[in-house]
Amino acid sequence: MTGDDGRVLRRVRIVHTLIWVVFASAILAIPFVTWMGALRWGVWLSLLVAVEVAVLIFNGMRCPLRGLAARHTDSRADNFDIFLPAWLARRNILIFGTLFAAGELFLLLRSLSS
Image (tube, rainbow, N blue to C red; front, side, top):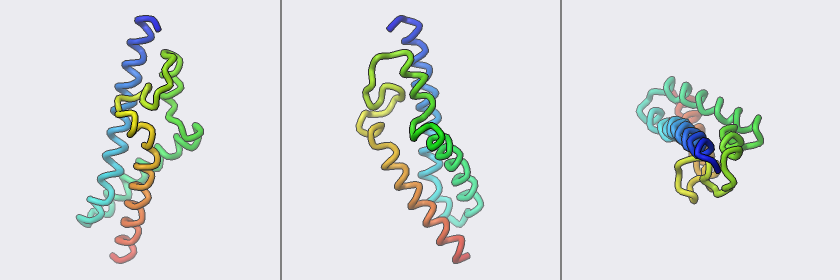
């Protein structure tokens, strides 16, 4: 890996991590705003996450930034493309997919009971 590769990889990892923070925060916020009765916020956050889910589905359940990062390193560790612990990067879709589904179910139930 050249110096340029290292700089590009670092930038990709930073951008990827920032995007992850936005979507992880949205997923975690959905049940809280729903519980507080801000159902419209819950819907908007859900739509934001749905866009990310569509991007993942369109890209074979991989973030497009992963391919960009792969061009700049030989590493294929679970977290080579993002600043997350390897265990979290490995289980990211399972953990946050489950939390998103639970949040959506809660939002649906609260919406129907309002």
